Amino acid sequence: MALGPEDFSTSVGGVPELDLLLTPNLSVLFAARAAGLLPLGFIGSIGEFSDTGIIREAAAHARRLGFAGALAIHPKQVAIFNEAFSPSPQELEWARRILAAEKDATAQGRGAFALDGKMVDAPVIRRA
Image (cartoon, helix red, strand yellow):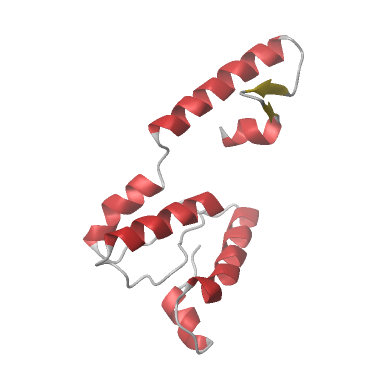
């Protein structure tokens, strides 16, 4: 499920920028997650493909918000989106550590535990 940023912006008489697109994109994100659909998108113009820095920043921001991917309209975007929406080596290591610590905590009968000075419970374990 995705929002057409150019279509939406034009329909409300605006331009596809963060201020205009954040709320409708978050609405799509929340609706997609609630319906069990894959949320795709980033906050900005889908037509932007020449400035790879802008694309990379927008994709990283979208992932932090909870989007699972983005629609590409140009081959330059594909590698950037694949990288931005995939876990980094550091994130994979964090997840491995969480899951190992969760196994130990479960063996001790604990549903929540601390790791690196932070509480870890069911939502954090699911994210891992």
